[in-house]
Amino acid sequence: MKEDVERLYASNVRLAIEAYDLLLLKEVSEAAMRKLLATAVPVLSLADVQGILSETDKIPMPKVVYRAKEAAEAKGAPQIGREIRPAPKEDEGKAAGALMAQGSAPAEKPKMPAVPNPSMPFIATARAEKTETEGEKPPGTKVAVEVARPAQFKPSAKDYSPKITIHEHRDVSGQSRCIGSVEDFVGYFRDRYEREAAILHGHPTNMPRMRTDQLSSNLGQNARIIVMISDKRITEKGNLWLEVEDESGSVKAFVSAREPVFNVAKTVLKDDVVALDGKMMPNFFVAKAITWPDIPVVRQKPKVEEDLAIAYLSDIHVGSRYFLEKPFKRFIRWLHGEEGQEELAGKVKYVIVAGDVVDGIGVYPSQEKELTITDIYEQYAEFDRMVESLPDHVEVIVSPGNHDAVRRGEPQPIIPMDLIKTDVKKIGSPSSLDIEGLRHLVYHGTSLDSIIANIGGLSYAKPEGPMLEILKRRHLSPIYGENLIVPELKDYMVIDDEPDVMHMGHVHKNAAMKYRGTLMINSGTFQERTDFQVRMGHIPSPGIVPVLELKSGQLSHIKFLEDKI
Image (tube, rainbow, N blue to C red; front, side):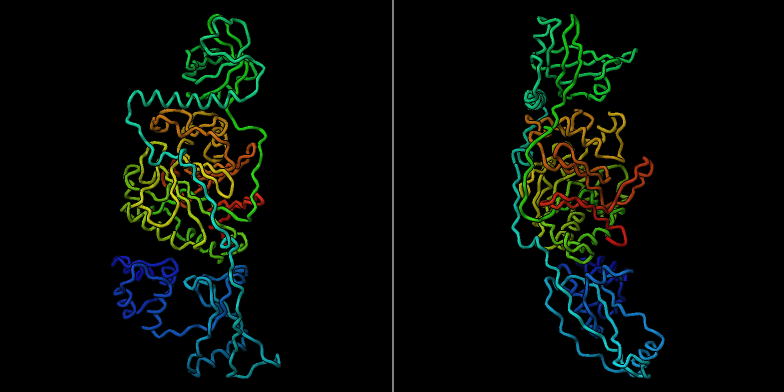
């Protein structure tokens, strides 16, 4: 029961997920509890606990059928680990009662078939056979129990070796050289401008390209200038003034409210790098069109040969009292083939976590009141225990978020080795990597806050909107200063290459949208609605995991808070 589990944890005895679930449902004798407390095993598995309980309490093995798939798909599926008996008819109930009255010794333990992972919990089912005559059974007739052997769960992903390439030159981990000097800031903005300008130079145009210092000698001529926005303001008449600059100088640009481009110009942000088409007047540049760096309309789509899948996670928030532990354990059981949709679960070869692995310590005022684990090392240790419960063939890739124990400023390096100790692949945020040939851009998404706040019509309810704005700008945090950025000499937030998948989290809201060949995914959360979100009117979508089948391109959303997956 719950009191037994709490007693074990108070004595620093840790339990595997399956063992934890068993003890929550079972009453433990004092003799068994003393043996559990005295164990030297660091983490008690299901087999360890069952062995102690069987030895101490003399519990016989139930004569049941272990049939995970059929029970999970049946209407009114039973709870995991519980013996299920058919509802007896009136006569069968009398027969069962007579059998119990005889006090017969328990039958010999049936030999169980070999299973891939003996520590997995299975759903137990049993069916009473009918007598040969199909007539009424005389009192005292024993009810026979059929023991059938189910087909084993055979994940197809187990047959493949992982194919992951991490582009380390696009990850700040181990490469941060910033000391906060003036040179760092100048170098950061120069690198950002040059790389985004290079993308814009690749866009076709009939306009002659000019630097800002060439405009005064070409009055009245059409021109394209590639500039960074340094300021923006609306006039009393509703027109728009932009102050822009390039490496040669600066100029004021005017956008009339009567021009078709005006609505686009209103979404321009400070520090955006754009191309302005127009003509130079004596005192200012009149802009007629605006071009973003953006993603090419047409590009070659990579082909994936293996029929594998990726599950995308973020914002797990281990250690928070709002952490949805049971749905997350259900996700783990699903990967073991125990919760339905076994074919899809068996394809999952990779799990990517886009930050906020734990809830952290001191992230916001009075956070300790909302924590169940107040030690940062224990929060990550709990995450490690969950990772150890995943199938061995699944590769886990983890990047940090604003709640994790890394620097708050972006780009963020990997979570330190002394925090996450399991064999996961650690990447920074942002990070670029190829999985089975698909280019992934993984970023926690902290800048989504500033994008939503500064562009009208965007909201937390539809994170695909601000994600699209980021992709069009080819920069993960366009507004310098609103989201804390460390001014490295190289701007790691620039999106140099077009990603096939852009994966974010942070806003606790699931979303998916395809734009010019790039699949944008926001993977939601495993944290229920917090008090802060209630005050802000934000409604999250917890317990939903996007799963991408790489060969077909099919994206599914598996809902672990619903009765049936």
